[in-house]
Image (cartoon, rainbow, N blue to C red):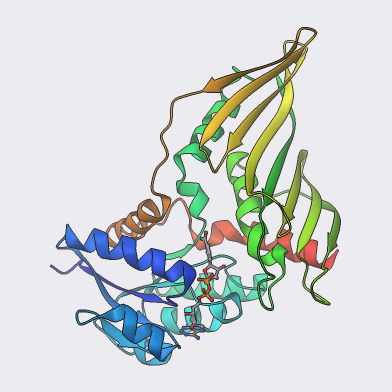
Length: 319
Ligand SMILES: NC(=O)c1ccc[n+]([C@@H]2O[C@H](COP(=O)([O-])OP(=O)(O)OC[C@H]3O[C@@H](n4cnc5c(N)ncnc54)[C@H](O)[C@@H]3O)[C@@H](O)[C@H]2O)c1
């Protein structure tokens, strides 16, 4: 079969382990796809994970020389995204690179250019684009049934964790949240205005929490992200008005429940919005990557789709 995809996962830590599980599972039921190799700089971790059936590489440069591998899903730390992805693309491999694509828009654009010149699929790990709940929210806010006018969206992402070494919470969480905001509202460009408050407490630099107000074109969003929280919250809220009343939609990403909330003189009433089911987004993203390679399509999470989000994050960090 000449359109067979032989894939390697590069970086098999927290996220890479989840990817391995899904790709291995997909491989059991298909002849046209195989999880063929793993790569990790930590030789002990690599040996434990690869078992007897997978090839293993502790140096990503050696993996890139293996012509039997034609696709890689890269989940190494952010600092190494650019160099590992560049090596892969130059070696002619299709790439799915985790978020944030790179730390600079220039580097990200350079990778997109190499992919284009070599006619390779190049995708970004914008996993929430595969969530049924988010796609349903996108339809709901477009339907005119719930809103005459939308005021703003609010994204709250809080939980408790130790600071991620050398990474600001902004680079860790905001790529997802900004992307969800841009994706749901179909925003492709516009002037960007940012107000922010951010801080770190357990270390000197690199933020551990932030409140950010973003205006792009005439769309507004508020983001609250924090690694200090007594409970885990992942909430998207859209506020607006309908028939003269204040209304909102609330999507709880953890419970996958969506509510429509109407605030009138009789008080606050909420109704559950049904019509979607919670899906396995990692598997759907993986299958979409394989499909893109086999059909030459590159929709949904094309790497170029993440460039605007990247520029906004750079602005947040610089403002
Ligand atoms: N899409 C999502 O929802 C999501 C969730 C979590 C993490 N991520 C992304 O996945 C990436 C990895 O995050 P993580 O939390 O799994 O990190 P991690 O530290 O748990 O794992 C990273 C792994 O990469 C290996 N590694 C480091 N440098 C390498 C190199 N040059 N070559 C080969 N292996 C190397 C490390 O040994 C480690 O095993 C990050 O970019 C992160 O933003 C995405």
